[in-house]
Image (cartoon, rainbow, N blue to C red):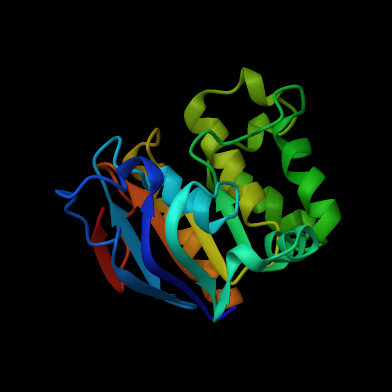
Length: 214
């Protein structure tokens, strides 16, 4: 997957709003592999919906989304499995960790399927992000900021052409935000991947190829 294209996409809930002002909705946009994009938004304008549409979780929109030149509405269940295993990775705003599993188990459950990252790399990320002492702690016993860091590590444990990040640093201090940014840039660069991040205020300080207002 080299490109993700949006052609006139708008959430169904906004479809009858003729006063909609957006650089994303109802426009034609192309996200290119290897480039970095920031979607700035106010709360309630559909930033999480946008990533859910791209990831194929939701289909309540009008317009077309294309991977390269294929409309995603033509993808089969098998196709989506392949896309999510090897082309798209996502850090959800609500993280979707398994609370009963430890921090490390949440990461390993994915990495064992993809066989992408060596254990030393994973534990190195835990160390860099200041949660090496939380490896054996249940996810539901971690703070939200600690859970964000675990979810980020898990998102990096697969091949991807694009990394989708929904408010990735909303609960992190400046130092951990910088560490997370550096890890993301290193891994995205290693894989030649694009980054699409959303924010309703605080965002990672990186060199974006394009910043769009939702």
